[in-house]
Length: 471
Image (tube, rainbow, N blue to C red; front, side):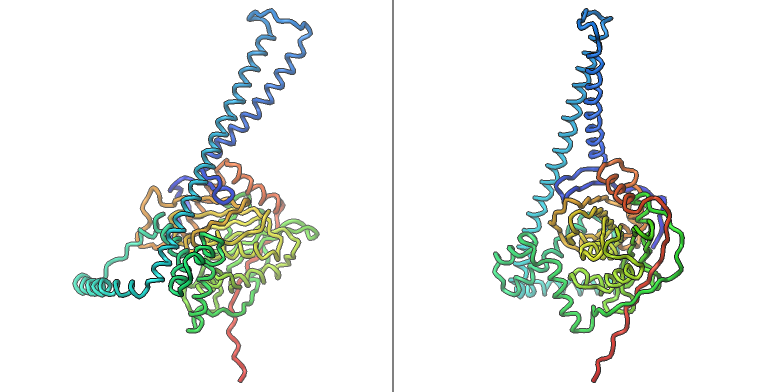
């Protein structure tokens, strides 16, 4: 993975608050916040001016330019106008953002409904579809073979994968897989739509992942097992993170044979607090190995089952001395972000804040009261693997940015917008934003972890070999 620590480019930040009820760029929301501050300060100064005017013992005005009482009256009038206009402008900006959020959510519901119907029809008429596709598919295969024989294997162009269109398409395809299965099984369309993503959400990505596991495990793939964890080295000195950039910078890199979890301990022995950082996928093989951060864990986690990576994080936290009352900030990238939200959703630990980067986790319901920051690149197709989420959470702030909006992605790299270092760039942009929801999340992290130094320990999880079955 290439490192680009100094590259700050791409699109601007877009903030979605409370699901998608309010959507705007961070600059617009920051302007609304400043206008509200101006409204408040103008009101305070208007009160002060009136108090000063009341101190006039004369009780009368001469209505001349030298009359200080008249000057105070005009000052009060001007401040009143500033208060009203700044309040009106702030309200207009928020109203526009809420309108955009409502429109975006309505459009997403409509598209999810339509893609579900298309998926259902594909499943319902699967035999006809296969027959119609057989001829063109065979012709395409022959043409591809002829091209390769004369020109050699063409170089793969990954640029489409690094695009917002690919992300949206991935979300719709993943969300429609359960509808394809429902159509193939002959489930009535109204029942499918009622239970699916556009209805009650009782079936969807998780149920599809469960079906994938059932088929794959019968063939020896995606087979989970028990895990063990161990501290990799002695505790080292740590300083509390001061922003989102620090949180992203401390996530362990996804490297084979290296620790996947970092746990920092702050506070006092009587009142400790913890920061937990979880890395992303290391192994993409469909056959489970000793590495718990693999494709098996990805699919298992998407199915809502106990993935090896999830179990390793839970064991690491317990081994680090974290109990159910200690406040925790948990952070993760990619699979680590999905695991982080699942740890918070489990309720086993007192998670106070969650930050995820490039994770397909937006469908995981984080408990109420947990400050949640979801950072997604709109050209990172990995974020689409969680499907098109319609789940609302008032505590979730979603930050989106197109990482390669102003430049071409690096040639030969399949998913550059998913790289941890690219998300670290976005995290630094978040820290530079004055938007109040972002500064509020940073404040939550500071309140939980404090400012005094602490200790950090790296942990590594290993999937244990399967025990032979007794004969």
